[in-house]
Length: 71
Figure 1 (cartoon, rainbow, N blue to C red):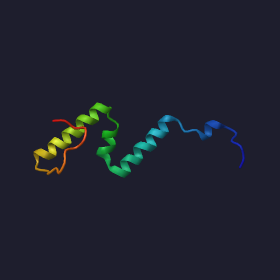
Figure 2 (figure 1 turned 180 degrees about the horizontal axis):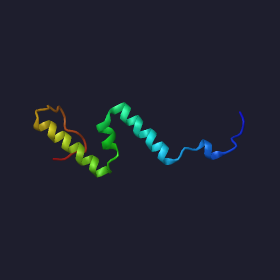
Figure 3 (figure 1 turned 180 degrees about the vertical axis):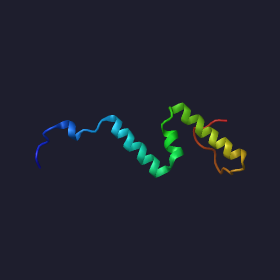
Figure 4 (figure 1 turned 135 degrees about the vertical axis):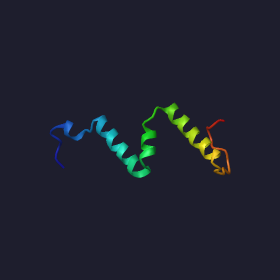
């Protein structure tokens, strides 16, 4: 194994890592979850609470209460 001549060729900057991670999320879980994963934490909490409330409103049966979500 030869030593690396230029370390910057090996290192991936934060923007490249972020784009790779976002593409992985999009391929694995879909566009909506990829969009939500970029939201600030409190926005994500509100979105998940909205999804749960919307499901209840449309008759989705929940066998247990989700953790961390309040009415």
